Length: 291
Length: 258
Image (cartoon, rainbow over all chains, first blue to last red; front, side, top):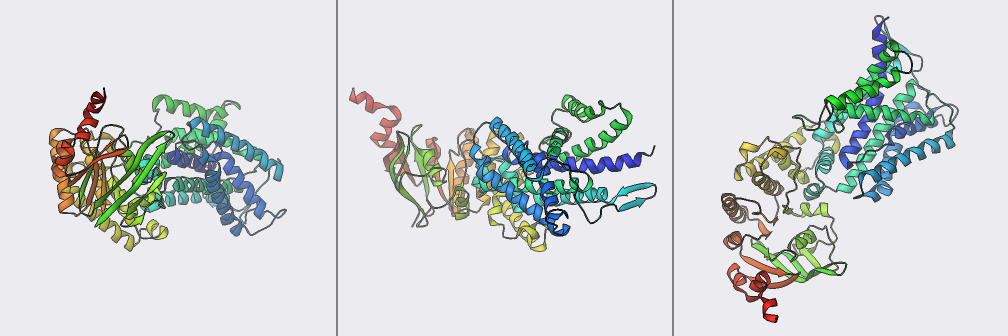
């Protein structure tokens, strides 16, 4: 058995988990609430890009559909906060949790009602193309997933390290009152964080749709991404990506080595182990260097 | 010239009148103190100027423009900086980062050039850093520059918050109980700093303070409040000896009524 194939497909899956986990962490850091609809956001992003670009629907060029999907999801995230989530400002966290679970249900069945419950594939320009490195055959999609994830992670890193907006988001997440006092419009910033979570969801959705079929319940893999975020230490951006990669890598090896049924437990078993031995996660928030 | 003017400002919470028709002005370059027993409305006046509360009546003007149309986050850009009674810092950041955040209202470059860290952004960051280093030197915060706030003692945090306010290069500084929780020595330092802030930096100071030693050492004028109403205004000495102020603090007026 050649493990390199397992590693590559595991990394590609892990990137998608990592991106969804990134969405969890972004919203959690900025608003101290967990957006349980992040997985469904990803599914929605995937369905929107399929709707825009597939031959049997609108048939827009793939290269136009991708930025359009990202913009639509950003606007959606922004207004979801502005019109719905913000009304719970100051309520207990559990209220936001229930609200986002409900939003997830609405998205799941709303998408099903509009586009049907059949699994669908995204028609990309590079469908069926392969990249060969020695004995490893890498699907073009898998390579693209890994590269785009790395690029997005790098862009986010630079955004949070250097840009005024990125610093304002971090400041607002640490102390809202103090943030007001250095001139940060906190509520507006929170809406922008939701918009950013929408962007990340759109990118992860497009990547996921390019390498597998999408149906309305695809968003449920957000639970795996949640485990990834916990493993990474809920609040660390690099932790989210690495947590996603860990789960992505564990899955194919568990499926290969363990009997069916047990292998699906592997991601959660790892999450439990992390919670027992490193309750703050692998990349705890209070570290010397943080993003 | 008057820098900050409050005119007949009234704020009610339900049936409670927290601030009752209060008017005063703070002149440019002045150190002005608000004193009074707990619940007198001192911090509420700060929160009104900070635009966390909307007055039900009256006007607040800064440099002769009403600030009631501004949002809370626009106040620092006008040149009003503030510290809090209970210290509001970015706990998971270093002292240096906290002060640098105070500089962000002066950031002028666009998002894209910030993300590619263009030469003009680098120049700007150097200038911000230079201002922050001056503040660090002034407040003698050098030993704590790269320490996280979460691990610092209370007295140091208090000074870091003052530093962050100074880093915004304000025209006016609102200090909410700058000496509360400080030791005698630290309070003495605070007195020197407030004097230097007034004399060297030319920043106008409005403060709420209970420590009468600090108030009478640094303030030009004092306004005494009780139950949201003005009791007396004048030099620290005049206000301290004012019969109504003494009554408000010691409650003799009730004794007299009986």
